[in-house]
Length: 291
Ligand code: NDP
Image 1: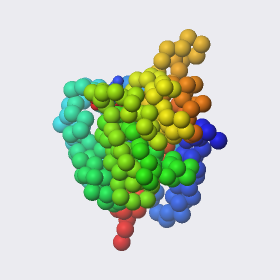
Image 2: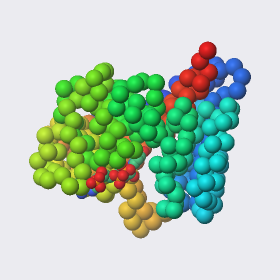
Image 3: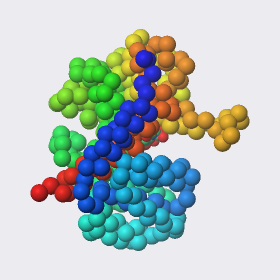
């Protein structure tokens, strides 16, 4: 099938984790969600992660704070979670309100509990190709999709549009690693890239992580390329109950006839992010409980 069913792959991972968690004697893995304010997208993301954790048998803890919380109070909460041996993973839901320093909050988390993989130590471990670290969930999810769909990156020209730590940069680093599910030749594009179309048309695998609805059009894609659409954009749609629909960074209708494989939005990369978060939480539990 041409469209890659990320929902099904994520559901398989959830099932696998449910089986492995069921065999744990004693306290189950535990993840703490730190949420600041009531941003509707953040509330909904944390609710979804909470639900998946419960389904797997991972104990979720929700630490919700008012929008006005100070950096000191946030830091103190993260310190308390770091010191609590019953908490294996900590996630600070992004975005934080603008008066808070997000990267400093991520770097406050004990790296061994940093299941989102945003701590400087874990980012460094990706660079050093150290498998004991935690890889940011969305890029890890793309690698997992490729692995499970039999898509080899070896020797391929992978073009990534976007250079954020959360997605583009980390995926580029993973794809260029010297090892299985990697060994790609990688080009990274961003808002200052000249002649974007000329570059994207060379991609065997095109990864779009831009945050601009349907920016990648059919004429930017090489015949037979594999297209991974990371974008999640809300665009107004009066025919929907919520008043909006979700679209990716790729114009799916134009790309689908040209691409050999493509991830849809929704139902492609999105569900993988939560599944990989849960995988990281179980990994954190295992590493912390190694004799
Ligand atoms: P950021 O805003 O952090 O990064 C966007 C990147 O796109 C930047 O590097 C920016 O360049 C680049 N860019 C912006 N405009 C252009 C342009 N016209 N041409 C080329 N490059 C451009 O976003 P994120 O990486 O956090 O997220 C990207 C998308 O992925 C969003 O839609 C987000 O919602 C989605 N997302 C989905 C997830 C999932 O679970 N599926 C998880 C995380 C994100 P520059 O650096 O020069 O500004």
